[in-house]
Amino acid sequence: MQNVQRIVIVDFGAQYTQLIARRVREAKVFCEVIPYTSTLEEIRSRECVGIILSGGPASVLDEDAPRIDPGVYELGVPVLGICYGMQLTAYTLGGTVERAAQREYGRVPVTFDTRSPLFAGMKGESIAWMSHTYHVTKAPEGFTSIAHSGNCAFCAMANPEKRIYAVQFHPEVTHSEEGQKVLSNFLYNVCGCTGDWTMSAFIENAVAAIRAQVGPQGKVLLGLSGGVDSSVAAALISRAIGERLTCVYVDHGFMRKNETESVREVFTKQFPVNLVIVDAKDRFLGKLSGVSDPETKRKLIGGEFVYCFADEANRLQGIEFLAQGTIYPDVIESGSVKGSAVIKSHHNVGGLPADVKAKFTGGLVEPIRMLFKDEVRKVGEELGMPRDMVWRQPFPGPGLAIRIMGDITEDKLETVRESDAILREEVALAGLDRDINQYFTVLTNTRTVGVMGDERTHDFVLAIRAVTTDDFMTVDWARLPYELLAKVSARIVNEVPRVNRVVYDITTKPPATVEWE
Image (cartoon, rainbow, N blue to C red; front, side, top):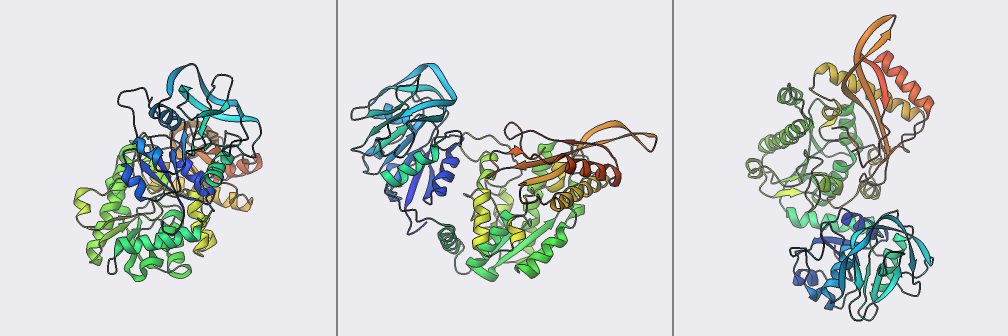
């Protein structure tokens, strides 16, 4: 990002690191996440106005614990340490960190010194989210405690002269009642930020970055699913390089009802681009014949997608780059961030297979890789994209294949496709399609006994999943009206073959994921 103030977030492997970034951006300040292995010179070269040290799973007392160059504290730039970042700050600057006699996890009442610029305008006491086994028992020279709890004398510490602050709790999570205020105070009261980052600024910089990466003659092939992420990526790249972008939509046979027709309508009439539609139904169904394991399904589909794109690149000729609508939850759940587990194995966020990489010599173009879903939608609105496209619910790359438990057959695809269409139709008729962030049906691999027309049946259980969320990192199950659920259930059992029972999934994420596979 050029010509905007920048905050650097140093990542020590915390699960909340990108949530810190999201909160900073919500405060209209641009930020960049870098690994803790970055050198002092790399940090200095970013010309940031502030540095945030993230939490992390390690203990600073471990011999191989992640460290940072002590020179970070001498750059003359404000520093905020969070959780592990606080303990590291204390340890590095001569304080004492010890194992707590009583660990603190969850919601904890904390008393704040509101005279500190970090806590200005806050209540004297409020709830903060704690998650630590170790804590600071002696602050470094020049530091004082500016917050405490019943079990922790140093819930926060500060050296105002050097503008170094640290908090033991997590201000980035909504469970901390005034957490966003803490971050905003650091950004505006301590770092002197002016709030100059907007979606229009992001677009301007993203377009410039695409042009710099692709060059004046480079050609890009984008894997277009028709979902909001790949669509917004297409719009950004199209703005950057125009006709040198070709969008390839691969119909793998696992699409929702009328999905391909809808994509053709939008991208040839409403928002025209160079569009190629590939009918690969037989190719994918053959590849997945008899495959039941969900991870195998995901990997086969993800890999086959890339090979479809490579085949189209060969046919089109001159294509150097492959573009994807990757967003940050994809990155985290694909295990590409230190400390994160692999949840979505079908994403190609880690790079291309070696034999395919040779065909896309320029590599990957991922212009929205560091954005959350709600931010992607804001970019789409700013670009003037059709509202229906921007606000449509997400649809996974593997499509209905991961909404069918067990092996995939044409009959099962018909069942889940028709039931999904009924659910979407009834949710829209109820006026709830903008209130629920994602909703779909899942064909389980469980059969139960039923009675239909005085006859005994032994057919599938079908599940409905509907969730609400801002960023898809955490979700809650949607409280659909009973009347709506009753109507959907009745229609599915009456109109869709091979289903005699409908259930509703009321599990949050975590512990569950949004999708079932």
